[in-house]
Length: 196
Image (cartoon, rainbow, N blue to C red; front, top):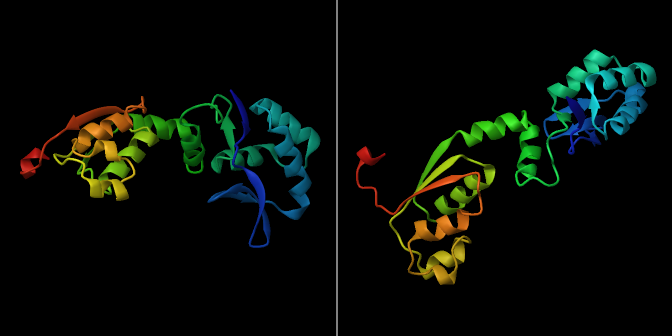
């Protein structure tokens, strides 16, 4: 397996300290190790094996290889090379997920989830789209309402051409681009707790 520097991993100044990382995932760089980390960052711009990283650290820095690699993994500052952060549909989601966990693991968990959204008004329609964009495996949308002209001004998913059509029909067309999400559409009004 080959690894490279995570695309969001940058050297920054945080409260007067030099850090490598982003958001909550960062490591503080002591002044005496600054040049070592700069060299390591340059080295990790191209994918490397763990053995190559260890060898580089031993020959070119004063950093402790095992501790340094553990810190980088712990803070998700290096990533597997098999993730295409530039050309994959989910690439930007993966960058976000990587701030907190292994993006492939998060994506797999999302892919195995089934989420229901009841009501496709101002919140439900937007939430449905965000869930599909995130890669939720199955999404059930439920609403018996039709799009009216007042919906168009505040619900960007619907257009003037949708007025008079069922919200579930219009939203399902809008969500059809998200191939990773299986869509279940129910044009029904919920009248009983048993339906849930």
